[in-house]
Image 1 (cartoon, rainbow, N blue to C red):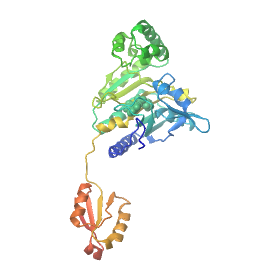
Image 2 (image 1 turned 45 degrees about the vertical axis):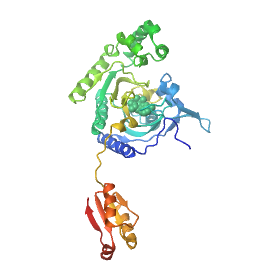
Image 3 (image 1 turned 180 degrees about the vertical axis):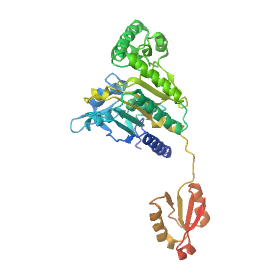
Image 4 (image 1 turned 90 degrees about the vertical axis):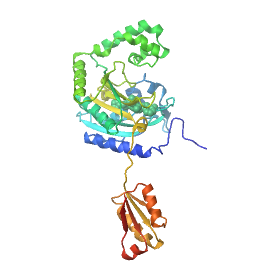
Length: 388
Ligand code: HAM
């Protein structure tokens, strides 16, 4: 028997929740004036190397990368942001810094070690906002994420941090690296390697021993420049006013290299170890890093598979059940089916059945209305109708 690849799943049992999630999240994004964008699943590998970053785990270990028949080095997208930024530049929106707010959903691919909540093919719902450098755009984007999660009654903790900018980050990095160099002997192998490659990532090492060593590490939020500090304060004040609960987590650095200033993650305590349900932040340098004109941007992505166990759909009666009690009525019923499906959800039962059998099935299917045609109705050209 041929089975789906390890870490890849058919969405069958949860398909109603899956489509419901996308529909509702899209509606909320559209209420925030975000428009839909679709980008290819396959992109040039160097797009991700230059955006997600050569030192990140995603690029280092997790890419589905191959040479296509034309000799191009390509890769299945591990995330959505890089492709959307490429599209923004390719369609020349960067030239005039045209503001664009986009949302998207679709499959992403990471060759990770599969476990509960961690897949090799998973789906994200994401948004990206270009052209707005004000921290109020970060607030808007976080509000949008929280509205989506609230609309499904999902409990979460929001963690926020500021990663600083080109002005304040280098000084902070120097003091962090000096601190880490002193502790080097006591840190795990991964952390030792990261001190030179990506020192910020040391801060979110999951190793307990490393976390103990890092307790006294310099904190980025105490080393921000005036501008970053002011924005981080506005962010916190506005979230409080909007009644969005949050925690400042100075170890939140995100696993992708393109972020600056605001970084955030929504986590759930109800889904096991892989608890991040949404991650995002500001990435003001990325458009430029991919050879566009400098345009500030901010966005997030949610992991749909991680959210589905938390989504409940109230079963509600909907749609019309259409049934026949005599073979002669088939044509008339088929015409009715043709007419009704223009604006209704209709279940057309093909088999000739007695009235009570039809009613039982309509009830089981949770239909709202039943329309049946038997001998008498056929003569009158009518349908027997009942609301359930
Ligand atoms: P990310 O944190 O790598 O960010 O992924 C976002 C979300 O995707 C995670 O919070 C998680 O829910 C889900 N996710 C990630 N990996 C897996 C996996 N292997 N299996 C299941 N779910 C997973 C990004 O991808 C950024 N592009 C987000 C962003 C958009 N930043 C700015 N704009």
